[in-house]
Amino acid sequence: MPRFKLTIEYAGTRYSGWQIQKNARTVQGEIDRAVRTATGRTDFELYGSGRTDAGVHALAQVAHLDVSTNLPVDSLCRRLNDELPADINVRAAKIVPHRFHARHDAVSRTYLYQIARRRTAFAKNYVWWVKEPLDLARMREAARAFVGMRDFQSFAKSDAQDVRQDGLQNEVETRGNKSTLVLVDRLDIGEEGDLVLVGIEGSHFLWKMVRRIVGVLVEIGRGGLDPADAALFLTESSAAPARLTAPPSGLFLARVSYTGDPRDTTLRAATPVR
Image (cartoon, rainbow, N blue to C red; front, top):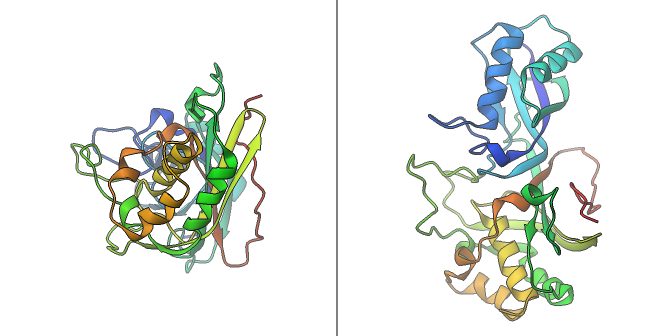
């Protein structure tokens, strides 16, 4: 049985996250259905590099698929896309060794967050519109506190809305790992058109951690917090990051990197707002 590496892009607006759930429409569920139709098989394994939460998007999610099929790779990719809804697309598929694991072999993950400086008619599902002016110098000063091996306990705290009725917590790439230590390799803040872009790369991310970092940075940018508060949240327990959680609409899983992959640190918009 061959193992395929799939690179997938999707708009998460209509889905309850990546992971298959009962009584909910999910990205993995749609791909699972497409595999059944395209290959005629029901005995296969589809495993993603990590979970994304409801409303979160992906530019390059990675999954591995074990399925018995005689379809050439290009034909499999085409047939999957024929069966998938328009907001999910398999960008690439290739056969990989069975030792490859989409999640366990990933060495880093990169997320992009898009903040709009103006109201937009076309990209509202892909941005967070912040009405107040943002001081990017203050945000960049605060961002330095998050780079390195840090304890993100305050950014992993649950709040009243964090556990849905089904008990699932989607955006947890380290589910089962109680440690709140995370290595953040870089955190960049840039501009493109009317967008402020936040790019963050790290070994893994805790549930809602990226959205809470963005929420804290935005609050600092609009003057509600001091840049020094970012470092304070890493050394003292605080409920503020949970309270400031940014909405999922602006968040994209931009890249999952594996050993030998070229390093791309370019910060670019996924959906431009001019």
